[in-house]
Length: 579
Image (cartoon, rainbow, N blue to C red; front, top):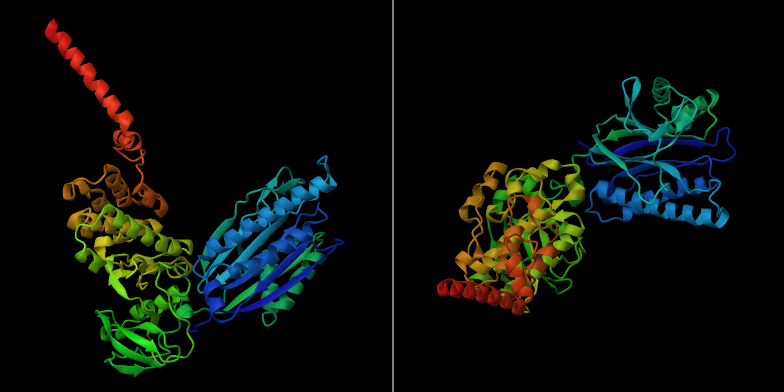
């Protein structure tokens, strides 16, 4: 199969019988990595006819989408990236509408709104993403007719009167319809404004596309002409997109096809390899071998990771290995391992990462079997900062464990090993990635063990388990958690209080840990910052902390109340004895 999404495109827009064209349309088909990561975008907009500035709104909506969409983080899902751009455009248009009305029509009469419909089709890998507000339409050719993939947001009052129920710029917030459909070679999508689809039957549109199949611009022009001849009094815009080829998948496109290069061989230090002086072995496992090396070109110390021999016959495993470096280059955090710039071609498949002199958290735990609470807090806080850098880019680490946390000589934490990372922008087109348990089961959230997609709250579970282990040397559910491969089993997990393993820790710390590792993700912390905060400050909203919270907040008042209660008890006992 081809490795690149290939499209043919035809477009036409005319003012028709109106004085000006308030429609606007555009398309952008990027090249190489941008095509794989963000896909091709086609957008159409129809400004409301009652406003003399709606053509500005339609042009702004389309231009903003086609330019800003490609500036969003590559790791974001298509839905997140597109929705945020559309929402931002809506906010700007609405602000302009209010400002324009106040300037030109302070009494509120008349219509000078920057208001427009907007529909966009994003074709990426093997999926079509549809975003829609208003009454333009996106349809797909099915045999001799059209399957309409959008819903008209038009409210009908009578046979002669209707109005737009939803449009960009009409309100401060906008509800955006989003849906996805799988695409195949030969699929044809048609985008139209109402001046066209209200005057040309679907069968006629399909017939004209087939008649001019070798020239989609001519097909679009013929449809526009047909709408005009059928009496349309509106602006006329048509876009036609035909899928000529679909790729193998987004993952292969992004990180490079693994069959382009052979896997790197196991190295025997000291040696040279691809411009690196390999000094010694740092780590070896059934998945990979890591070596300390010096880049002869820059003099920089790096860590080379090559696939194990067992991995050579595992395309998915090789692909995950190659994704590690790709992920590292897209996160900028002092608490996430980075990758040096790539300055030359490689002869084999392997990754190059920054080298950090230090020890893993697993070793730190062996060296510190009973660490102080404050030391644990400082490490957890740094892990949380690193994970938030993942989550802001819609990535979930999925394999957070003591062996994947490095601590350097200065005590700085860095998260490593991104081979299991879930990337929302790629999971759009390969959801099966989420169904495989790639992390270490002792630290993996129960919902992931049960086959549900990992979320940021899955990482919070892992952080909670690590924090619990640092304080107690144990796991919060013991060996039970490794068998929680269903939601029913997860509900039966029994949390063991940290007080049972390490008496003397503040009860509010135990309550925070209990919430962080709750088997039900809906009962966990929503964000890491809340967990980090509760490790230092009593949270009275957590179960069982009502009395404890008072003791922590105002110990003087607490003991005064205790003394008062005791005094009352003594008085009652004395009174009874005297009687």
